Amino acid sequence: MIFTKLILAHLLGDFILQPNSWVFDKESKKLKSKYLYLHILIHTILSFIFLWDLQLWWVAVLVGVSHFMIDAAKLSFQTIKNKKNWFFMDQLLHVLVIAGVSFYFNEFNFEYLKDQNTLKIAMAALFLTTPASIFIKILLSSWTPVPETTNNIQTESLSSAGKYIGILERLLVFTFIMVNHWEGVGFMVAAKSVFRFSDLAQAKQRKLTEYVLIGTLLSFGMAVLTGILIK
Image (cartoon, rainbow, N blue to C red; front, side, top):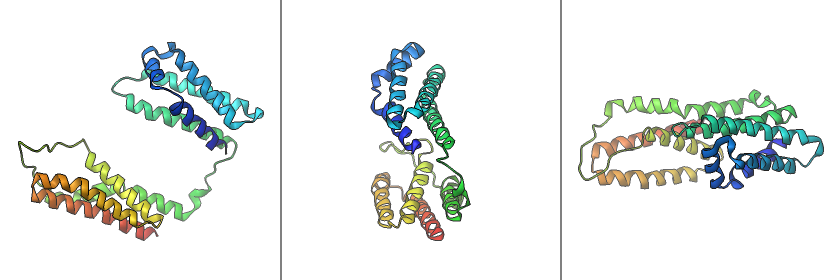
């Protein structure tokens, strides 16, 4: 498949064969950096090598030109504050270009959207993200504990970390169930217990411990029940 070959070329060119020194030079000198053009040349050559078809030379050139335009825009508009956003946008645009080329060669179609099982899995996975977080938050709203102030224990947490941890754990549990690996669910429960409840034991707040335990069981239970229903 052209898509697979071009993705392999992209991964090699953008990550494996691009030293950090090149990245720093591009970010400081932007379009004046010689490594930007060397980076584009490597991408074009890799695309041509992986395709290995003289009739598809224009695909390698298209990938190289589009890569230059995307990288140039990124270097021109990227700042320290939006660096993370531009990284993901940059990667998404590169993949979209490759997907567009693959679509041109009819490697992709949308027949899978007619498959009811695919739609059910997509619906379940979507439910287990933000919607499930909101359900759990509402269910626990009457028991939300007031944090106790302590001088010895650090109780600060990353912004929205609990929400994203919950989403990831539910999606992982759902995936384990869908591929019939229930032992993975047990591993997830054990792993979270080790990391989460050791901190709670140090905090010595019974209400907070019970609150987290109920939230964890609701999160895992919701993922398990959703997986069983879809299966």
